[in-house]
Length: 229
Figure 1: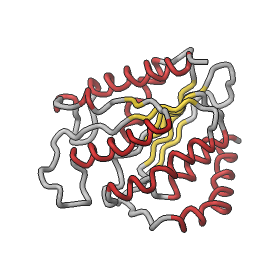
Figure 2: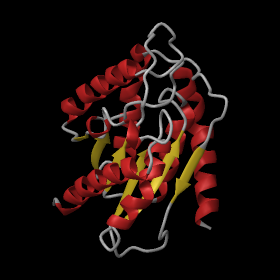
Figure 3: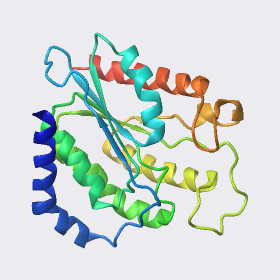
Figure 4: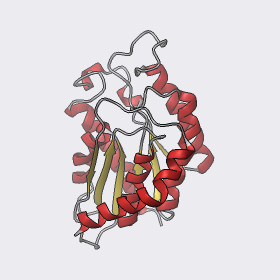
């Protein structure tokens, strides 16, 4: 029944707000494969606070370890998506999940997708992404995770459809500005990964060692927020 309720919520959001969101921004460039992975554990339990991790495949990778570390303290859910922040679909995904559950802490990231879009556009559309989370979960404690570096960064920055560490640095600087203005703490997952190609399983993703380091930091900082009144 929860799954059906989520689908109905998504349909309602699409009908009543999807068109207006799409009209606000240029159409988001799609990747060759677009995906979304939503996982809500202990969906019917209410005895522990809930935590939501929003992100992409990096978030999805460290999610199991974070869930394990917070066992008995919180129920941890995830919303992983390939959608760029100017894509109305991402905002609908966020609204759908946040309309169904109350989360005490939301740990979120978006920065490793949408390389067809410039950093200028990234900066222009980021406020709507943040506003959506704020509006749908006004009482949640937020923590932003910056974007992790590549194993090997292309030396040329002339191709504006590929990821480079230089572009990741720019996106992290953009988001840091917004977080500082709104008093949202930043989870620095970028720095511990820098200069450690041995943490990578490919150019973007991390092996068990890299994932473990990220999960330790995420779980510790989320637990601090859970303890705050």
